[in-house]
Amino acid sequence: MKSPDRHWIVIIFIFTGGALGTLLRYTINVQTSLLLFPWGTLLENLAGSLLLGFLTGYILKRTIQPHFKEGIGVGFCGGFTTMSTLAADTVFLAETGSAASTMVYIFSSMFGGMFLALAGMTLGSLAAGRGIKEKGEGQR
Amino acid sequence: MNIILVALGGGAGSAARYLLGLWIKNHTKERAIPTAMLLVNLLGSLGLGLFFGLVYGAIPLITEADWPFMLVGLGFFGAFTTFSTFSVEAAVLLQKRKRGPLAAYLMLSIAGSILMFLAGFTLSG
Image 1 (cartoon, rainbow over the protein chains, first blue to last red):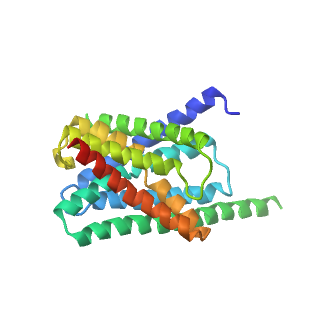
Image 2: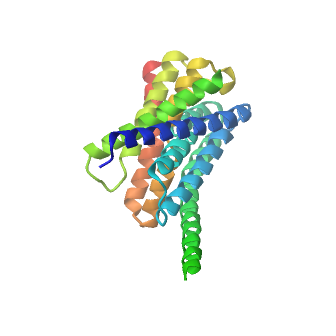
Image 3: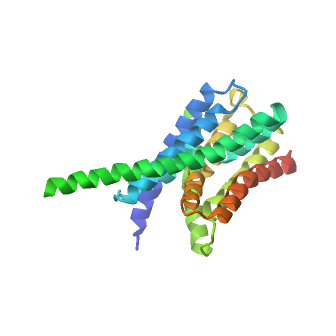
């Protein structure tokens, strides 16, 4: 069982990771705010999906300390990507833009995110596996 | 100033997502589709819709945003909801070739979040 203070350390890492991820999202959104299409949120959601996929693939083969794992995954990736802004962007786009751009936004987010997460999982698993092999060979 | 508000809102939103996710996992049985982050995303999208409708009566642009937008909209609700976990959970369903649950999960997450935002926005606007 997890002791209460260990639990607090995980929460502090998640808070910090989430704050950093959100700051990066804010920085990108400010840079892309004048464009007609929500490129910023799309880029964040796709990049964050790739990163969380990589982490997921990596930790299947290697252990990372829980507070780092949750700090990067739940905190940073979770705070960097967002579903509520995607929903708001879609409604805004449907009102001000074309139906085609709204559809492009939804489908590139949804399928792009899923396939990038899958690619990230494969890459993460490869990166972790290669390290283990090299270590094993070194011991022999 | 904006930087501090965004960081505080984002940190609090992420911690709240983690704690609510744990609570949901402990109080629901396992299903064919992952429910914890789905419910968090639906709730957060409803919350952002309510917030925009109540405070602005519109969907504000980041260029004309004020401090509540930074703290609550971009910070808290932005970070409370998440897209990366959605993508990974969808990828796992795809990998396991669970087509039915995958289709349901994609629809419930994306269309569901948009509809929940719209519901909140319409109700309060």
